[in-house]
Image (tube, rainbow, N blue to C red; front, side, top):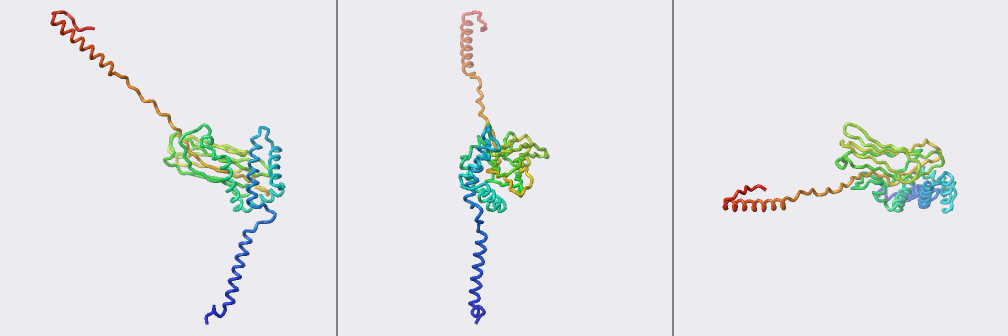
Length: 296
């Protein structure tokens, strides 16, 4: 009799114990603290929260007090207090995998809200043949963790003189206190390592844009940088970059009017007729012994 046959009851007990332990581990992993708002609830609140901040900043009389009034309205709408919201945000900032799931869905909702704004409206007055060189659904920056987004693209034949490079994104902030500031940079590195760049600082929600025009030299690479300029703090200071992307816009040249050449056919025909008449007159005059010399 084999060992398994002799100890079948022991094997069964071990298998049952393994299943129970796996179930307990899975339950612990998926268990959400009772005092933390679930992800679906956080998604709905954050969507309204960021939208309220954008509306407050767009108001001509925008102030910190007005911004608080907008966000207080959102919290009351969802039946929670500022303390409930802050506690949940602190939890999600510590569990970034869950926070990423929330913002992944938020990014989709914001794109649907804006109706995927046209390339022309994003690019301002620049229009033409548009090509997306790089894009991402979102990027989360946290003063207590990953506080920068950077991207480098190698130059290729898709870039040529006169092309416009446009880097844009939407900023959605979550701050308790402290100055909001993003340091952004768009740079073109040419062969020979000469560099042209644009730097801008942003402190508000909404869509932000940087633009550069490609020069005559060969492009070696293009670099993007967004840096959250905020010191570490016990309480989270976070900004979400929604739908960041780099576009290449090539102006469409207007067709040149066709070059017209003078129509000399009619003039040549007229001259030929005049020459024929003149020759006939000369022959007739010669036959009469006249003195017509053929001059006009």
